[in-house]
Image (cartoon, rainbow, N blue to C red; front, side, top):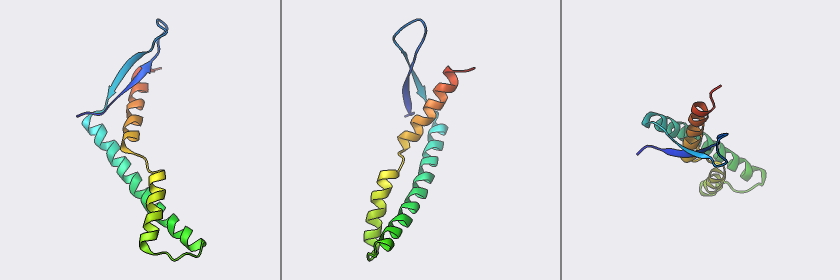
Length: 101
């Protein structure tokens, strides 16, 4: 099932926006999922490193489970979800198609 997102398009003819639904092709959707996955892996590595620094600076014992718990908490706070990436791509397509100059 293709990803879709609706955007409001305003016109001079009406005070009410016209809703335009933008669909991502399967290829575009997979590309956004790939970008999201790569970014999430990078973020998780960064979070593990940050968690280790927190333990070190606070002179705490850096047991792996504790480090991972902190890293996961940081990751959940920072991580971008695939829906965000897909919505971003859909917005890019919407703007390109509806606001050509």
